[in-house]
Length: 444
Image (tube, rainbow, N blue to C red; front, top):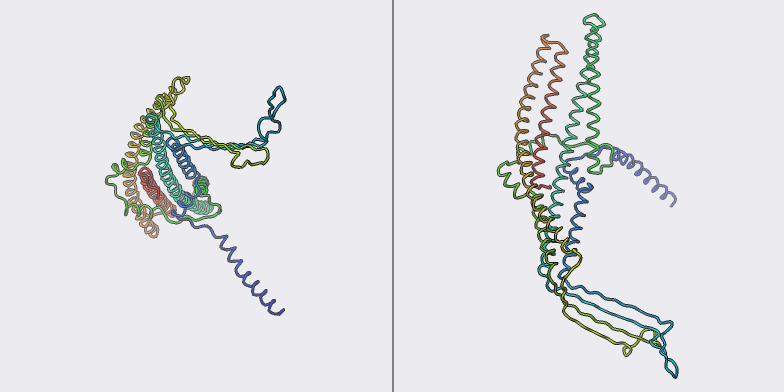
């Protein structure tokens, strides 16, 4: 029995010792992050999404409140009274006590609005349209967050490429400095050439520090948006692949018409304007009488013998009627309320016109930028091909002794700069189309 226990303990220790290193290794591995995963994490954690969702819930609550304008208002109450000292009624021959020791009162009151010269209908309509506007605002917020996430992800990829180029240029300048120092020691060049190479190293080093800082800030923004707790993570994908996917799926026809029909902000402003107008009409109804049906029921029981009276010790009363509420004068409260509602409605209408015209200009500019960035991308692609050809030719010329080592390195640095310029144009191209997606209300 003891042997079996020792054997089981040994097997458990062996399995644990084998599994634990793999667990530590898995925890130490950097997180691999794709654009899709990053967008999903951003939607889950970014506060803008949460604020928009709560704004929708608030508008829904206001919509529920507006139903009270049409639904009955039912109130119930109960009270218990213990008469410790009772009132007394005096007579010439003596006195008697009034009331009982225990008193229970139950009551129910119902008020049903019937007619208010449009106050009920317009009040509910105003809250409903405001809720619809808030739903559109939430979708627009998701589209804006999607654009922000895409832009941050693409910017981080670009900053990483900039850092690579800066480090490559710095390494190149170090190699050139070493060669120049060797040539200076044997007397081939003057000290001026060495100092020039050393100055270039310092400049390239400063550029590396700047690009590394920019890359760190870009990665910090990714952590901020998606609440990434892991210190190290790797971005999957590259800018060229994202650009190629746009080229395969993008159709630029009828985008303006699609924008006018699908822009969520314009639709939201339209609903808000309609809500404000309905609110103005509901406020106008406050100047006119309103009708409601009311009913009351009460039941009272009193007893000194028992805490709770029996049926014979209870009495009931019921009543109902029609209530006419006629506004006469309330110290300009109603007039001021209507004036505010009227100004709010007119302001919402002007806001809708202003935003519609401005957004149209912004969308036209976004389309122009997207088309321009496409031309720039194609131009930079041709420049990159030319730089690659030039570098291959320079390698052949170096082998034949026609150019120096430093000339070859300069051409190689120009190739890296051309590649970076091309990636920058690709970044602007995909970000411009992401901006168009945002304005079209795309949230996935």
